[in-house]
Length: 274
Image 1 (cartoon, one colour):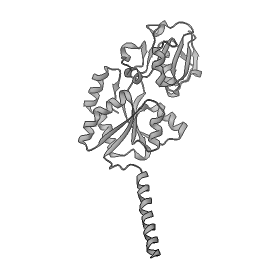
Image 2: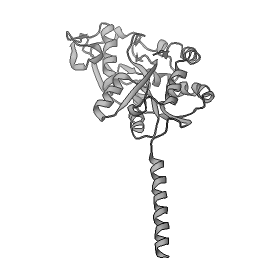
Image 3: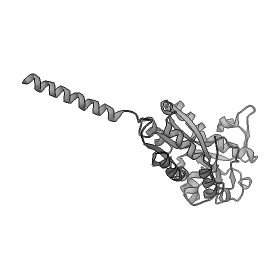
Image 4: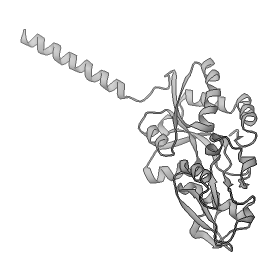
């Protein structure tokens, strides 16, 4: 009798352990639910438009919203997400280098031009000597900011420096002695602008649009459409061939969604098809 009871207990334990192991396993490519992390604006809004398209493809899209630039990659790495949608390639490469992530870029979706905003001057060239420029503490944003000021003729880089890799140490000429303060959380920049901090604030369009401003009209300078900083869909390297993620990217590249993006943001968010 004891042997029978012991056998039953061992069998039960095996089933329990198997169940626990199954719960911790990675999501299957056949899973009907696709969990995607995204910044609130415009990423999550764009994904909401994709939901009906994916529904017809048999995929239920679940959107998890984030207000920072750290947690979406952390959640993806820990298996809480199937993919995320909020970052550009330079940011992704920096995250992989610093944190050891093994991620894959599975498609560029749109560009959010980075702009300069000010309550003190109407044009970038009107900044006075010694003006303070506030910007993100995200290193991947620094070349974008520097490029805007280089194109405006306010900065010159050292010979041979690739603008996409430029840091503030690569500035050769700064005739107006502009002071760049680059230790602020990206999510705080709109607050800094609204409070009138600094002489100008460089802000990514997703935060600006979220506050009801139009980057094309309200900025004093903005990136051109030739910017290499398109926002991408990212997943784990081991999951890059997931059929549902491919359906997501295809839907985001559809004419219906790209037309909707252009109409919704009037050029403040620009769709790409690669």
